[in-house]
Length: 156
Image 1 (cartoon, rainbow, N blue to C red):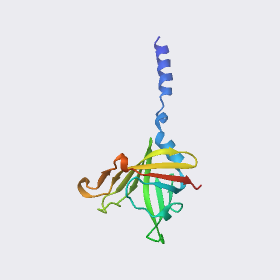
Image 2: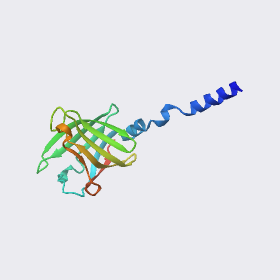
Image 3: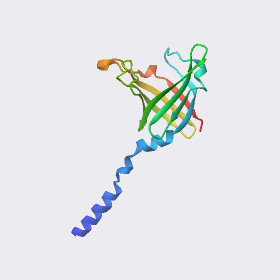
Image 4: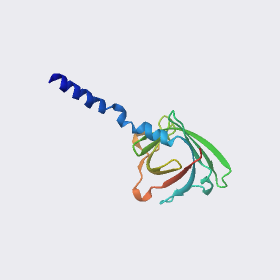
């Protein structure tokens, strides 16, 4: 009887592997690669240059780095690159710019709902921003009516 109990206990514990709940790694691997923004849907008055569409890119690296290349300026003649860290947990993607807050000792953090992720399409909805001010200032929980969708297409 004791051997039978131990046998069933071993089978049950094998079925409950810790790798079963590894959605972070799975989602991160699905998002890896280079993406170009193809559409911006803004429900607020946030200004974004039109030339950003089909020019701004995210490149998600497998080490957790995120490279953002963008065009800016009134005539879109300026370019820039920001380096972030990112992670994906469930349907939430967090983008962190270490020491990028308004207080340079604090991080700048954005959180997005991953509304869609396929081999060719990524839809992100920004819902949280921490601008990195001291004493918790600059934290914005974006109301649902003011959230924006960013639609990205895989480049490679």
